[in-house]
Length: 262
Image 1 (cartoon, rainbow, N blue to C red):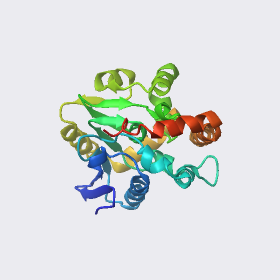
Image 2: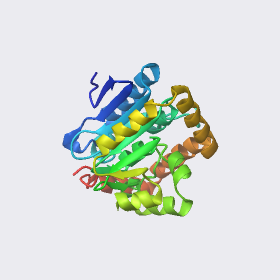
Image 3: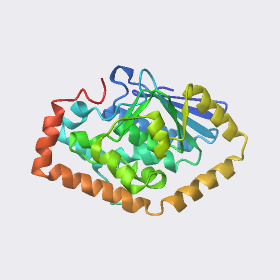
Image 4: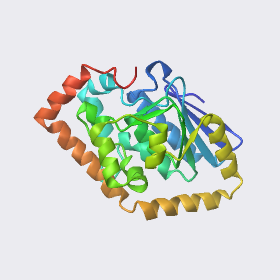
């Protein structure tokens, strides 16, 4: 089936999810956030799915937040950040931690730009297979924001604190080779689509119950403080957004919205 911004099909026990806004390099607007969250809920209910592959249509996996579209209305920020309890996931976090909370392995197939919110979504996967020419960046500081979509959970599992802070503070764009050396991706590939499918078929050869329990165990061991981290991300983002100087910085950034999706 097709949602407005995401295509979703199931074949041979594999759920294929494709971000589908190629004219904007799959930049995240409100419709994209809602569609990704909707597809995650559909996968959770579908017992036929045993592996998921997430990719992007067009030139890029996902170039990040469509800041001009999302931040032009204050109500959008509220919709993205609002949550009933501090440790819950808000909409911005659900499109990342939702993949982690699925009972099946999730493979992120990365090509082109994987920046900002796109990098956060990729961090929600259990495996990240990147094209050799892909570029990756934790880019939120370019907009005067902090990474607040739940990717911190995977960074804590994969990177040393100094490496994670350097990437987040500088918004540096790195290539696939450097991303692999840092532990940001699982594998570099000349053909990520083929290699993602190969890994998916390999995972299908194992018991789905075994895969489920391994995923649950390892996420619990590597990241015991999930709710605390989600709460801290959201609180610190609200703190940033409410600061006078940061409001000015965000407004200035909106005047240069081409960074993430051109």
